[in-house]
Image 1 (cartoon, rainbow, N blue to C red):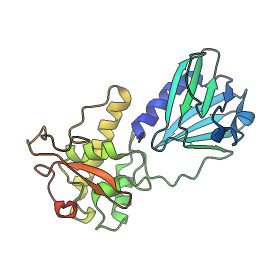
Image 2 (cartoon, one colour):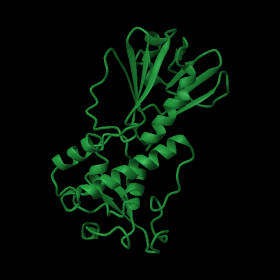
Image 3 (spheres, rainbow, N blue to C red):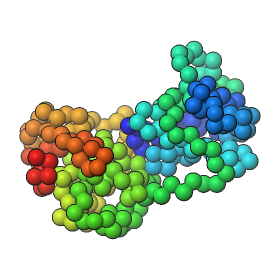
Length: 252
C-alpha cells in the first residue's frame, strides 16, 4: 500500500502542473461515470497538497479533487504524448507534461475541504508529536502499539512498512500494549517514523531492517525476524524478538 511518503513524493512530482490550465481525461469507465473530466477540463490547477495518505488537488473555482491510492494506486508524471498500455483512471495534461493516475481507487470531487478525520500528519515539517501522543493515550491502553500506529485517526501517514521500521528503530515490539509503553518510548517511535519517512521523501528510501525480512537475521542483534498478523484488519507485523522485547505472547 502506498504510504504517506509515497503520497508526498507524488505531490512533489505534480507541482510541474501547478499554475497550468490542464486538459482532463478519465479513460477508465469507473472513473468516467463520476463526471470529473467534464467539470475540471480546462481549469487551472492551483495547488497540490499531501495530507496523510490523501492527495488534494485544488482547481480554480474552488473545486478540490481528492485522491486516495488505497492498496495499488499510483501517480506517474510523464512527458506529454508518451505511449501507454491500458486505461488509467485519470490524466491531467499540460503543454509539456501528463500526470497519470493508475488504479485510482478513490477519486472524489468536492467544493469544500474534506472532513478526513485524520490525526496529525507524521510528515509535517514540524510534526505535532504532543497531539499524536494525546490521541494514542486516549485509546484503550490494552491496544497493541503496532495496531494503533496504523490508525489514521491517531497519526496520519504511517503504513505497514514504516510502522515496522519505526518500531524497530525505537526497540519497541509491535505487540506491546500502549499502556505498557512510557511517553518517551512512544515519542521515540513517532520521531523515528517522521525521520525515516522524511528521508524517503527527500531521496531514496532508507534500507529496510525488518519489513518483509521474516526468517532473516536482524542487522542489530542477529536474532531472527518474525512476522504475524495483527489487528482486526490482519496486517502483517514484522519484528525482531531479540531486540524489540515485550508482548510477544500475543503473537504466538
